Structure formats: structure tokens, C-alpha cells
Amino acid sequence: MGQISSKMAGLMGNMLIRSLVYDIGIQWGLFAIAAFFQTEKFYDLAGSGTFIFLALQTLRWGETYFTRQKIQSGMVVVWGLRLGLFLFTRVLREGKDSRFDKVRGKPLIFFIYWTIQALWVWVTLAPTLILNSEKKDKELTTRDYVGWSLWAIGFLMEAISDYQKSSFRSNPDNATKFMSTGLWSISRHPNYFGEILLWSGLFVSASTIMSGYQYTSVLSPMFVAYLLIRVSGIPLLEKSALKRWGGNPQYQQYVKNTAVLIPFIW
Image (cartoon, rainbow, N blue to C red; front, side, top):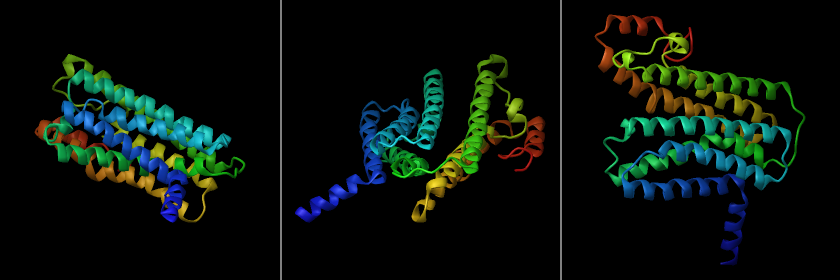
């Protein structure tokens, strides 16, 4: 029993494992509340809030507060606050999130959604968790500035495109129209491109201090890209848009001339 307790203590002392335990605990705890009230209104807010909590908590656990750690954790907090509040106000305004129409009243499937969110948070945040667990610091390098620049470009692209589309939809005259102006004129999903870009940037910066198995955290931006390109992002929105405007010649021309994700390329 003593050896088992010692091993458990060692595991809980590992910042990555501790973060995963907290992450799952938060998502499952909030799932219980969401399932009881059959609501998804705070689902996205819970996800972004967990990002913020774990970034700050691991910074506190590490007790080193190196410049690179503080900047990276701060970037996660800024991203989480912006996106979380944006999505939360949107779902309150619209009254629901259509992604949950068929699962809201099915606890088991609803539970899977919350569990996937826990996985998304932990895998995506892995480079930051690894960075905050490091006890040795290195001087800032070109790689850090490149990574932070990618984050800044991605963050601005995501925030601006979200604002542009929100403003477009708030105009009653656009109720039957599709968005094709601003950043949406160079990409059909500029917000998703920004999301992938900013997490890629945070991996690039964090990789400055990495070694060995830690480089596997490159799965962070890859996982984000996979979810958005193949699972819950682009496929669902493209299908919905095709159903709504597929017969519109202007939409057909927009699809033909506008990149799916990366502006001017693809």
C-alpha cells in the first residue's frame, strides 16, 4: 500500500497528470449540471475557462515565473477570455447551440461531448503545460518571437473575422445572405485559420525549451487543425452552407474563387 501511495503521489506531482485530472474533473462536474438542466449554454465558456485556469494554475505550480512562461500563459488567458465571452454571448443571444440539438436530451452522448472537450483542452494546452513545468530557463530566441508573432497574427485574424461575421449577422437585411466581405473574402473560414495559426505559434515558442518526448506536443496544433478541418468545424459549416445557398449562383462563384482555409492558397 505504501508503494502504491508513493506512486500515486509521484503521478500527481507531475504537472501534466495533475492538469489532466483537474481538466477532466472540471468538465465532468460541469457536465452533471448541464445534463440536469439539459443546457449547452456554458459549454464553450467552460472549455475556454479551463484553458485559462490551467495556464495560470500551472504557472503557479511551477513557481519559476520565467518571462517566456508569463508571456505564453498570458497569451492563453487573452485568447480564452476573448473567445469564451464571444461564444457565450452568442449562444445567449441565439438561445441555443445547434450542434447540440440532437444530443441535449441524451446524457450518454452529451457526456461524450464534454469528455472530448476535456481531451481538446489538455492536448491543445500541452506545450504551455510543458513550458510551465520547466525549472530551467533559456534566453529568448528568434524562435520565441516567431512563435509569438504567429500567435498575434492568428489571434487578430480570429477576433476580426468573428467580429465581422457577428456584425454582418446582426443586420436584419443580411438574414438570407452569406458572408463574403472582409477577411471572409479571402478565406471561407478565416477564424479557423487564425485558431490553427495561434496554437502553432505557441508550440513554436514553447519548443525552445523542449527535449525528447516533449516534442510530441506538436500534436497540439495538429489536433486543433484535425478537429476544425475534418470533424466539427469546416465539414459541418460547409454542409450547412451548401444546403442553404447551394443553388445561389453568387455562392457557387464565392466557393469557386475563395480558399477554404488558407487565404489565396487552400
